[in-house]
View 1 (cartoon, protein in one colour):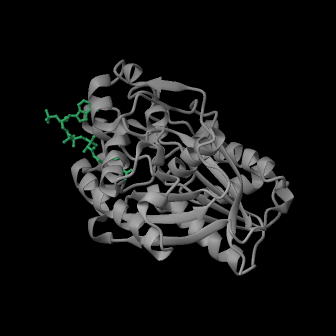
View 2: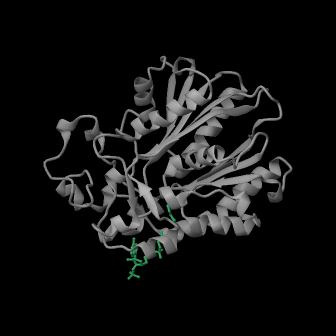
Length: 349
Ligand code: ACO
């Protein structure tokens, strides 16, 4: 059975950089509060009505396709992971299919929040290993900036999240020593509401400008939502940050350890760990627990904030582009997020 390799990787972030200082111009927060608790210095926001989760996902996909040395017509399956889809339905997979002019191949949307990319990777790995598909496009992308509560009520959440996208092309490995060694998925719905958004967000207007609501969107940093919805809490993400922290710092080391153990490795064997960029303090805690050196852990949350399903491919792409990941390196990807859902993948690059 063939292993699965990442044959091409790409990422895309909007050019609109929003620093902590800029946030203080329209909300009650401070650079010091954000940096001390999360490590975040700045994040990217799309330009409203010009870009969506699907369009930035498509940008990342184009780069991954080119780097894999294939064309859009070669793709035989699409997986799109996001918690901020353009429409409540249909999913972003079909929108990317339309934008890139793919054949009428299957398109699957994954709704597993911060671990969505890991879930998508695991699904893709099974299809490649069985020989069913040869070129799977997997995208993780988010546009959070359209639907966050920038009032004092929601500031513990809104300062953390940013917009971005990452994509990979997965293929059967030509080299038996390279590729995904194993994937490990978990979930536990007991605390489903601890990090949740009860109602769908509304950024479909980006595709159909005539649907824009009459209320000017500048009120809360440009949140695209009508006044009566603005007053309802259940249209915004809710997070009990401390409950998330406590669970994440246990489950992430556990699932990384599970992947290492399954393949008879120790933490010291890792060339690089790419943890989901939830919060720099969570990543540092995981690093300490596993006794990893700074060289063994990659973080870029400082520049992009938490980009949920995009965070792992965005970090992996930067690690590869900057030479932190080299051929045959042992790399672990790990994520934890709303649900709770969590997972890991161990691979030889
Ligand atoms: N700016 C200034 N003050 C703020 C802000 C803000 N952005 N947000 C909250 N505060 C204030 C609160 O109003 C509160 O003030 P009070 O004591 O006067 O009432 C105080 O700071 C503490 O508020 P908490 O909500 O309890 O904030 P906490 O100290 O827990 O920090 C944080 C929030 C950073 C999210 C923390 O809980 C944490 O690190 N959680 C880990 C989870 C996480 O990072 N999740 C990220 C996404 S989830 C994921 O990817 C899996």
